[in-house]
Image (cartoon, rainbow, N blue to C red; front, side, top):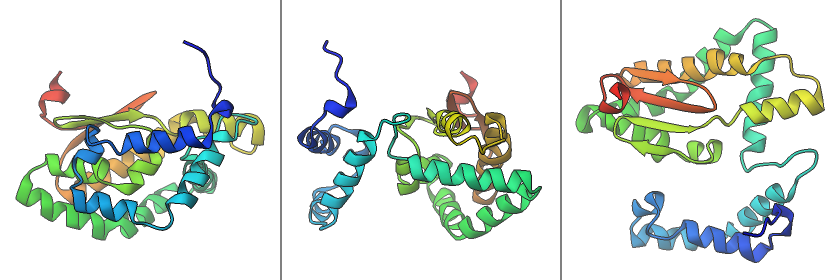
Length: 210
């Protein structure tokens, strides 16, 4: 197979990739019926969105940028500030407080449909997750995904030289407490494992036992 750099991709290839992502065979689009697909295609801001994605992936200096670049870097900046100022607990409290209405809505759905619904709402069917994670592997009682922070933090520490936090800080002072406190409000128990690939499992699920 010929090794093709990202910079050699054309705008047409990006559009074709997007159309492929909309194919009914993909798990994400399988959830959408024809009306929802038509509503998506009828949006008048798709051209700008595709242009933005193309320009982001076309940026390769001083490292290859990804679609979640701004979101991840902004979260890292906030975490750098809160940890160095000793107010990390307050930042987490504020995040949970502003997200609590959504978490309570999920709790109501879980009470009607079961614990698996919590993972669906937090990962599979959440636009914020689409923007943060490159992909999410779905299994009964478990969601796993590549860590979105590690490589970006390494790039920031190398090129910006203004970050002092470690990758372990992101895991232990952001991801784990955020997911676990969210689970508490929803009314479920989870196990969180962080690393190159992170996972969130419902306690006592078959996936968690394996």
